[in-house]
Image 1: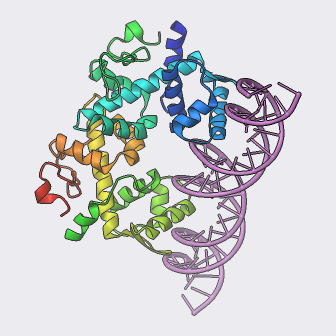
Image 2: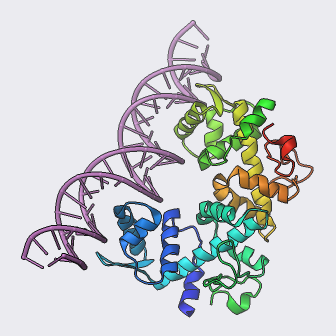
Image 3: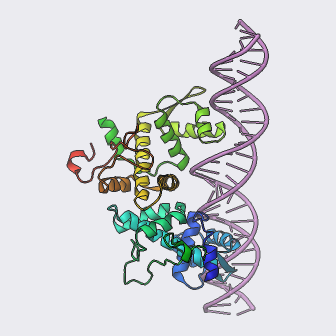
Length: 162
Length: 162
DNA sequence: TTATTTTTTGGCATAATACCAAACTTTTAG
DNA sequence: CTAAAAGTTTGGTATTATGCCAAAAAATAA
């Protein structure tokens, strides 16, 4: 936990490509070990494409891959995926503030999210009062916004770097 | 004028790559004919890289290129560049609403703008009351937000498709 | 344990960018 | 008015991110 936090500080939010972010978010919502085929079907791509991307994600420490068996998120991968999910939710919420429908917010967010820094997301999250709803997650639904990764600028001494 | 408006309707906002959008915005703010070197210096890339991108933009009708002389925006190019500039400004303003500094807003916007649709921008613009300030343009400065390209959803009969 | 299914490998392709060196043009200096 | 300098374009190559296909390998089912 304390370890995650300290690792968190190093997340810029720009380290992964769009597809990789999608895979990580998918893996997080799945929870358990996920087979190559599940991913390839979810994203409608060839299984070999998935094999290659997960190999890179595994190399970079985001997930463990047992060949022919499946993948699971590493601790770092979970932390990163949580951040990605939260970023998606914060951005989706932001768009919805300007009259976009939930679907539109989600679409626009999906195209831009990989390019928005964690610093910006944290700032926005604070500014919004650490919301728990978003275009994809409503109160009462299973997964709400997880603020663990949030760098609380307003209380630097309490949480910064820890 | 009427012609531009009708062409506008067909802009999705996603037709150009990041670099091409940057070039178009640069060309619009420059106004006159621009030489390859000016662009290559502005973006700190090799002149040959510029030659290639402008060839593609010219092919697609965004600009006229006279070899060894320079490029100018076509009418369609101007219309598109105006939209790009406005999109940048609307998005920058949006980020600034969530506590990002002007510089931060501008940075984040620069990374995401190419992936935000015109439909979303128009909606946001309406929702904001068609503002004239942004992270990059303050009131009193030369270029303010140009709303010509805006699809005014609130007054569809007056402006839609015309 | 063979047939079927799943996964991985290796090869190849495209879009977006970018660099370099060589070939051209245009401009400038004599 | 030409030769050198400066600017531009071509052609070749590279990288990153993705993705497909066919063949090989492993796992599972019959």
